[in-house]
Image (tube, rainbow, N blue to C red; front, side, top):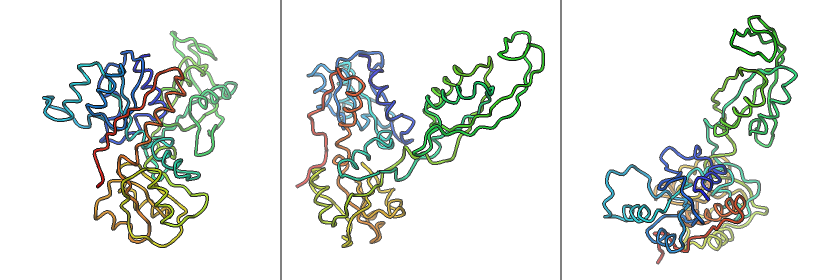
Length: 364
């Protein structure tokens, strides 16, 4: 199977456009046209992980964390990054990463944490902006239903828990074709007035090519008139962190114990216990200190994340229990997300979990 077929399945689930500006998700090393008989799933890419792929004759590694974050000026083999890059290239090992795009998508890293903790009805904690567009087009009245449905089938018209959303206004369109036209209605060289429907519908930016293709293919006109506007609205299906509720409130100690057991963390650093029952939970896999104030604003009892600095614990201000469970620990199940995506899409394809523990932090 071609590498690009495998990575396309990941990107269909977690579009690269959802990644943060500092990130480097996507195919980092390798040729998308190269074939591979299997894939190795990992959280990080190290020399040991690459050697594991070599030993198992696997040509593609999919990891959560990118091997390369920043631009490289030299690759001299004097550090772990250089050594890993050289080893991968010498052995034709392709490396792909789905990082903050998998963090930000609604079914990604944070949703997995919610599933493991039994959090019900999880919602995005801080939705992204600038990820929605609006399409406006003009269709002959008799064809409006056909075009509208084609747009919905391509992914347009979803607002929260509602689909097939559009706004429609009837009016009159005018046009005149020149000698090189073959008009669907009217005659070339003559002004024509046609009863039309103005259709407005919104869609995520990563669906733009699909939506425009559906519009062109379903629209009867030789020249299709349409406008696309960027929207400022929040996109509720992607963003940082998630928040939801437990089925039944529990004590702080009970919840701390549950989290420690599920994530097998060596320790949990946390703020002062507030001696109250825990019901509403906010989570953010990886570095999520920037979300403490948002978790408080949305009345979470607990915020689970990682990489909290000393002074950032003060941001809890005795209004929320903040729990730092470790970066690796909070994201360790990302491999399972990759596995589920690929096995569902390619049930007969060889998908293997890396057996290398890449967590650089140990507990004494």
